[in-house]
Length: 381
Image (cartoon, rainbow, N blue to C red; front, side, top):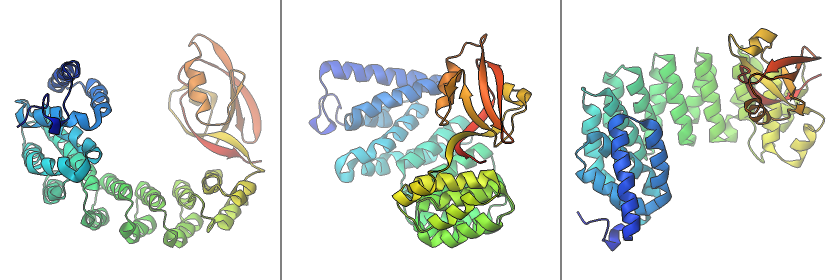
């Protein structure tokens, strides 16, 4: 193989740049040996800054490095970079050199950590030839982490036929956690061919988390043909979170086809969680008529979940309570609160304003973890 330091075809470097890349490669190798994911993540960003100029050094690692784990990381990084290299040359190199090596490492039984990294890299490379291997992994390997990795890799393969495969797996998998993973991988593909399977899962799956994932995936597809199913679920499903996911999936930017339906949901005296989802969907539609329809509603930050043993639980906070102020500052968006909490010393008590059951209450909390998961929403009288 040509030397990446001097070959114009492999994007030549000055001596100073080459020395810096050598430092990055050495740090990368050390982090790989020690399993330092935080360092690997930082170095990955450094390589990405080099863009296509990182290809030569990383190919060198892929082909020459004695450490299998380092070669896997290099292959995964190259998979992330391949779209930036013109002409598909890098993709072809990965298919020739990387896919067989990655497949062999992913099949090994001795090192689960290496298998995990290899499966992740396989998805990042996206070689359709990996399909049979990944399907075999799902059939024969019942270890949850590795199955999760295989599902993620399947969702990343650049082959239209994978959509049908994922749909079949999602409809036949007995484990609800894996079904949910398969559905989310299906949604990430944004392939309209998945609509029928996703609609079926959204209507009929017994697990509400799977139904909710299917509805989110339908929202990612953004196809009006799914609206009838989404509206039926908003009206009929027994689970409020599922109904909310269906309502939010109707909020396609610029598409007013469901605006009247969402306005009726928002104005109804039904579940606040579902009404909030309708409000957010209308905000996402974003047309003048949609903005006018929500103009009379006051935005708010709603409690989605209270963490056991936290300050919030001790205060008696519940889902759908509305947070309006912290330490004298108004809270209008979910993004307003975390920075205020972080900047408050743990030995300082500050006012915390909440609307509970329609009544405004002021509590005093100390800086540090409040113990709530929050989301943008709206105040209902």
